[in-house]
Every structure is written in structure tokens, then in C-alpha cells.
Image 1 (cartoon, rainbow, N blue to C red):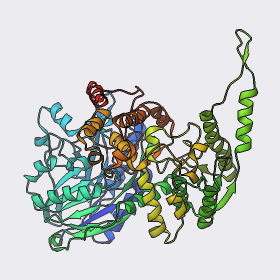
Image 2 (cartoon, rainbow, N blue to C red):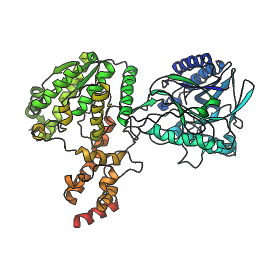
Image 3 (cartoon, rainbow, N blue to C red):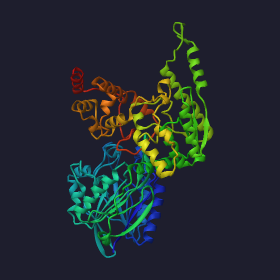
Image 4 (cartoon, rainbow, N blue to C red):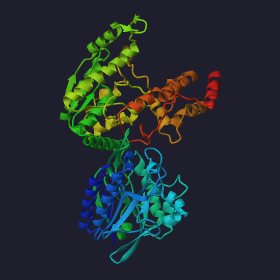
Amino acid sequence: MLKIAMAQMEVVPGHPDVNTATILRFIEEARAKGADVVIFPEMAVPGYFLGDTWEQSAFLRDCESYGRDIIAASKDITVMFGNVAIDWQKKNNDGRVRKYNAFFIARDGELVQPDNMPYPYTIKTLMPNYREFDDTRHFFSLQKLARELGTTPSKLLSPVTLKIRGQRYRAGCLLCEDGWSDDYEFAPFELLEKEHLDFYVNISASPYTLGKNDKRNRVFGRQAREAGVPLFYVNCIGLQNNGKTVYTFDGSSTAYNEKGDVVRTLPEYEEALTVLPLAEMKDMAAEPESEEKDIAHIYRALHYGIRRFLENIHMKKIVIGISGGIDSAVAAALYAKVVGPENLLLVNMPSVFNSATTKGLSQELANNLGCQYMIIPIQESVDHTIKQLEETPMVNLGTGSETHLKVSSFVAENIQARDRSARVLAGAAAAFGGGFTCNANKAETTVGYSTLYGDQSGFLAALADLWKYQVYALAHYMNDAVYGREVVPQGIIDIVPSAELSSAQNVDEGKGDPIKYPYHDYLFRSFVERWQKATPEDVLEWYKAGTVEKNLGCEEGLVKKYFPTAVDFISDLERWWNLFTGMAIAKRIQAPPILAVSRRAYGFDHREAQNGAYYTRRYRELKAELLAE
């Protein structure tokens, strides 16, 4: 009876030595458990998101060398693994050496060649070139190779025949995107389906995205059911990044039987190895569908991502500026679970505009967490800065004339934010021996509702891919499920969101941020996360049709509540669109790295240019119609 092991390993990007040691350890474990085949993830040797490290020939040679170590370790066991493959005699379209994203199979120290492939490995066919993926920048696809050889991908894409203990098995080998072919002109799975296979293997390096696992179970379960053979999906865990955006890889490796049922799922964010007898899978009971709420998955992604990020940069202590608001409170509760309260310093920095209410809530939060706590008032230093700016002469060296700067109330707000971050938090973090956080949420990040060199600063923006409503949900989840008690005070959850930078933002009078989160969360989300991104033209079409809430997914009645007239609605829309496509882009470029959990995170996942706001011709026509009514 053929026994197949799925090895869910942590892949450390850019460290083939570390990854190969993990692979060799898992090979021994699989062998000890009587497995005939052991499967590892896509790009298990080098990692996946490496930037332009792929252009280093020395690194590529190292990946080849470590690949040979894995092949040599395949005595009496079939090892399936992902690695970069190099044809040193050919070039990519960029003139650099030819590289393939490849699926290797080794047995008894030799590679097993797919039936029709010109190389002793399977080459990835479909190259994702959207969101965070940039495969065509570095890798040559099977489709390109087929054209180069004067044939078709269907002639090259072929099963691998395995000879194990006197039996022959035919395996269909796919690399990640090859199983997600709905939007491509070519479907690798369907071509292999004609080959009378015994099982499929999909090796992946698939970052966590909210809702992706449910969709994968539907897609891959259907594929296994229609083909009538089991499918093994093996994904990695770990943390990888492409500079501005940091991605968690959750694993969740899954075995589907020939009925399309999920019969084995490996845990999120844990290394694990499981062995399944191929012949018995059809009789295995389907695992029950998870009833966990989305926020539970988000919490695990954030907790794991923060922990691994801190480990990667060797940071053990954290400083958080807390205001008595929800974002900093949730960040504090989250980091306390990662680093421990003894390694967490919370700093409250009140000015004359901070109420006794929020100062009390900050103290209550710190008491609940049992962490380190400081109160550093900033009013004296803010006043001193304003005084210096206004009283110091500004000399025109061309004419010798003198003038003085005038600090407006708006500039005074920015000075407060910068004093807190650039002076207090930066100094406290250095003295405490750690780093300080950026606590921005996704709505603020969308429209740049933050201060450059102020509250936008920090080493990581862990909450910047969560909309405000998700931040509140996370507060409830941590109180209820993570801590089992009220850590984030109910008063913080209930209070109106406010930056408290002026008397116009007095929380005790119910005055807060200009962002109306129950509506703007969803409006801003339509700008960013819709696959066909919304523009003001789309929003005005919905407004004219009376379907804004339906299309945005927000609560009915909010448009009328917040915007009694078309003038109000259009003014609000243009205010935020101008910021989103204007100054907010410059701020996002300078923002800290963002930990991704959504279908579209800022950074490399959402590539943007500083071109300024644009309104289509149709938008201008709609605007004129609505304002004329």
C-alpha cells in the first residue's frame, strides 16, 4: 500500500542552507514513519519572495548544490520538492541566465524525469503576475519553453511515472498557480486529467489571504472529484516579504480524496508531517468545515507575522504610544501576547487637548496588561517648538530682510504628532532597547490621515491592512477568546475615535475624526480591494441608481444619514479621492512595512504612481447632472 507523506515546513526566504537542513530532517521522519513518498512545498529550497536575489549567480549555484544534497538523501524514498532550476546555456528574456520554477522528484539518488519534459523536472506553466507576484520578472514558463521548442505546452506537460516497490504510479505534478487556471487560456490540470493518473500533487508557496483557504477547498475539491483521484496540496509556513509588504504563509496543507472531500488538513502556522495510505483515502471521513469567524484567522496571522518579523530583525522589546483610542489599544494587546508584558512599554503623551477620559482609559489598559507604563506630557515641548519657530527670524540672504513664520492651528496639530513620535517614542525605544510601532489602520492609510514623521512612523504597521471595523472586531476577539477577560477596556471600544489634536476633537463632547468609519471603511475598500477597482465614476453611478450601500456592502441608510444632499455626497467623495490619489500616496511610500491579511494590501501588492487625482469624462457628466437636479 502506497503511503504518502505531506511535509509542511517553514521556508526561510534566501536561506537554502537552513531550508535544506529542514528538508533532510523531514525526509528522515517520513522514512521512519514508513512513507514511500514525501512531498515538500514549492520553492522549498530558496524561498519564493526574494526580490532580485534571483539575479545572483552565486546564489543560484548554491540552490543547485543544496538540491543535490536532497537528491542524494532519497534512498528508498521518493522525495518531491520545489527548487529553482537553471539552464546555464540559455537566457531569460532579460538577458540573464534561464531560470525555471521547478518541481523535482528524486528516488534512490536519481531524478525522475516527467514523461515528455526536456528536463528532469516539471516546469511551472502559469506565471502569476498580479498582486504580490512577479514571476515573469525572473522565471521562464513552460508556455514560453514550448514556443521556443516549436511545440505546445500540452505536448510537454506530462505525468511522472513512479516505480515504487514493484508498482507503477502515475502522478500529475502541479506548481501552485497551475491549479488556479480559471482566468488563463490554458488549464494544466485539465490536460493532465486525460492521462489516467493515480493522484495529483500541487506544491505551493501560497501566502495567507483572508478567505483563500475556503476558496481553495472548493476549487481543489472539485478538481479531485472530477478527476476521480486524490489530490495532495502542500504549502509552506513562514514569513516572506517583497520590501514594503510582509506576508505570512499559513501552511494549511490539505489532502483531498477522490470524492473531493477534505480528509486531512495540517495546522496553520505549524511545521507538521502526516502520512496517508493512498488506497484508504476514499473511505476516510470528510473533516467538518470550520465554523471559526474570520477574525480568529486574522488574529493568528497577525500574531504569527509579528512574532516571526521580530525574530527576523532580532527585536525583543516594543514601545507603543497609547492614546486611549482603539488602534493603539489593540496594538498593545496584540504585542503583549507576542513579546510578553515585561517587554512592552506603553507611553501616554497627553497635551492640553487630551481629556481625562482618554488618559484614564490609557492607564486602565496598561493596568489590564500588567506591562511597563510611562506618562510623558508633551505640551511644554510643543509650546517651546512653536515659540522657537515663530520668534526665530527667517532671513532672506538675498535681500537681508527678515520675516517670521506663523504656526497655524493645523501645523500645531502636526507638531504634536511629530513630537510624540520623533522625540518621545524614538527616544524611549532607543533607551528601552527596542522599536516603536505604527498603529495606523487601513482607512487612515488609504487617505493619509496621519502625520509624516509623526504617527505614521514606526518599524512595522501591523494593523494597516485592517479596516476600522476589523480593529474593533479584533478587540472583542482578544478580550473574549485570547485573554478571556476585558483587556481592551469597554470604554475604549465605546468612545468616539479621535486624534485629540485640537478642541474640535473633544471626545467628551462626542467630537472625533472626520472619517465616518461605518461608511468610509467600505468606500475606501472599494478603491483598493475590489478586483475591478471602483472610481468616483462608479460611485456616482451607484448614487444615481440609489445602490451605493448595496455595492459597497455597508449598512443601509448611511448615505442619507451622512449626506443629505448630492452636494454633500460629491464633496465628501472628492475630498477623499483627492487625498487617496494625492498626498496619501507619498505618505504610503514612506510608511513602514505593512503586514498583509487582505485580498489587497498596500505596498508591493497595490502598486501606485504619484500622478494626482483624475476624474473621468463620465464622472464630470454625472456630477453636472446630479448638481443640476
